[in-house]
Image 1 (cartoon, rainbow, N blue to C red):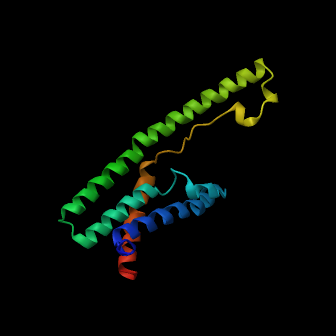
Image 2: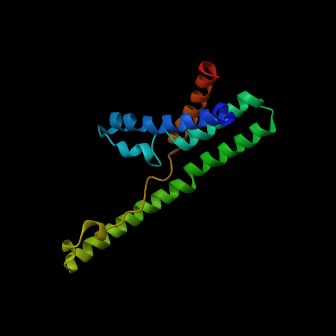
Image 3: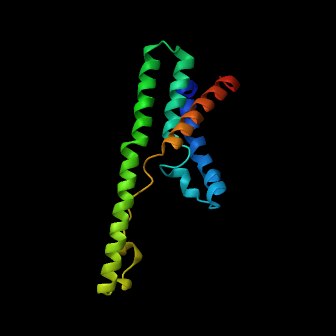
Length: 158
């Protein structure tokens, strides 16, 4: 039962859910497109990974103090996670976009050469996930979201 009262954990989980949920109206405002699949997808604005780790770090800092070893561990964990979101994962997403274009071009060639159009769509193309990582601005606002969620929860609930 103590787990239910673990402030850093609760703040981090709420930050994840909030960041995932807010992606839908943000995309709707920006692109006039309602896409509920954003609730469970990676990538996009704001970064839920960044929101999670900054809420966790803020929660740990509020509970144990900014000079505690646990806060130092949480802070380094947050920095590595946010760096990874803009680095390795973003590059993997960009490579996936290029590979998807190559597959699409190859499929077009094959469809012209054979009776490709008679096959089911699932057999024609299997796209790699392109929206893996984050732009730096998405990580920044994800981090800001996590900090604000943790501070607001600390003021209102804990």
